[in-house]
Image 1 (cartoon, one colour):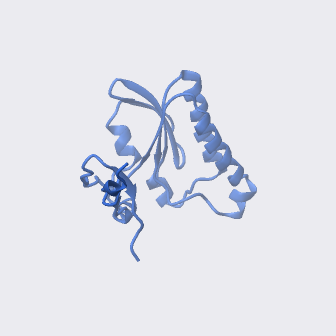
Image 2 (tube, one colour; image 1 turned 135 degrees about the vertical axis):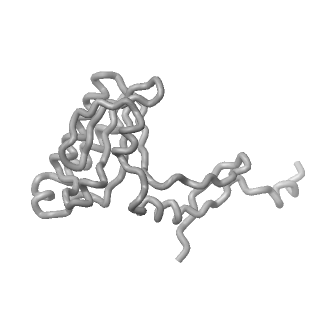
Image 3 (cartoon, rainbow, N blue to C red; image 1 turned 180 degrees about the vertical axis):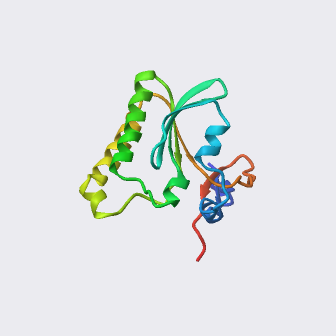
Length: 165
């Protein structure tokens, strides 16, 4: 076997700078959950607090949407244990209705107060994640941000790069 042909092999993975995408997720003018729900036929089930629960149409498919409302959180109402229980009810609904789940992730983080921790925040986060991976239908998570600029991959796999210092 001629092993010299492997000496100058082209890389299978192209490194792509991802830090601009992280910064874009923090931009104040980006579209949020409400804009996504307005773009589709939506029946809102729960709209109190930082978690919104809805049934939405995406093309011909209906899905349960469990989304984090950035505007409510910006007003100081961060996600607490009770809000995560709402999200879990949405996952149960998706399972019962045999619908896919779309989660919209748009949060500065959970409520880190003593009250939230004493109310079972860590437990609810763990249960919410466990319930999400147990949904027997497709699940898609959307991280809201500005419209990305496509990068050519030339048919190669792309691996995320590390932010430059």
